[in-house]
Length: 457
Image (tube, rainbow, N blue to C red; front, side, top):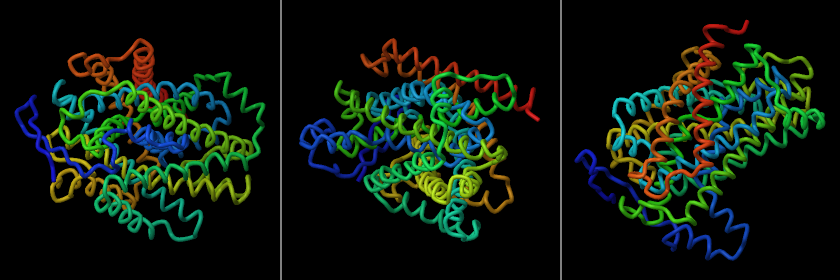
């Protein structure tokens, strides 16, 4: 069953899907407070923020970090400390927008800002996410190939089928729980770094003393790291997942979801903070592991996470390579549904379609249609002979130009009293948010300069 709600902004109708609340509690506050075990209380708080943070370490991101470590050694480790507060501030604002407005980011933009800008951003998101999903499907198959010598192309279709079944057949609560467990596979990257036996004094120095160079290779790598950690699909996914969580609590109607208590926002901040810390920790250890092995031994020219996993075997031991491959597979199964799902959320809210994993596919045909088409097109990319590295490059280019204006809109939304009421940003959040926005605009300009004006040799 679905609840129809009047969209006051355009006179249309928006369907908010829902299922019965997953627990006997009406709110997250009640669920947390009723749990006597401190660890279980903490785990109940974790949800959309943790999943979003983990999904940021998708195979394309892992490949970017591996390339950074192999080509530049420890010199980019400091970026993990810089991107953490920027990521956390942006994602918390997206979470807050979803919780306070009761709608996902695209729904808010549809009601309050120019439609052409929204449609352009959503179209760019769909194209970039589809290409990214295709590359990640190939990366899953490549990760399996590192562990078990099954030809990569043989695995493409089975991997795609598993992902589609997960999204179309399973309920929202099952999907959310699977995603939470998949985040654990990323711990393999931390473990693989320990097998690399790095020089911890060099690691510490590179972490706390930033290195900067005007060398085109260094600049392009820096831009790539920034672009893959602050990605547009995360903005839409975070806000829409906050809405889905509230629907699961029984807040089926829009008026029931509007507003958020201090405790709810505190829980959201904790969830996002843990998720972003986890994401950056994985990034840090991937750079560390590849710098301590591949870079040290002169293997500086790798183009994917799968190549890094294979190359690590003789240098850091078979266990390190296998762990890197296991993390790659888990990251891919986590990221692909989120890439296609975030595009489906954005398009559905932009055009007023029924949406959400909590409703029957027959009642949300467009939402699930976007997921199926994007996943299948992504799958086909692997059979067209397109270089995955080139595909991910163009994904980064699209994201690089979509993210800055989206961040500007997020800042405007989160400071708009007519949308956020008394939950507009405070000074600290605004400072971090505007820094992130400025950084992404600079990254977009740098992307043009390092790619087309002053390309590296």
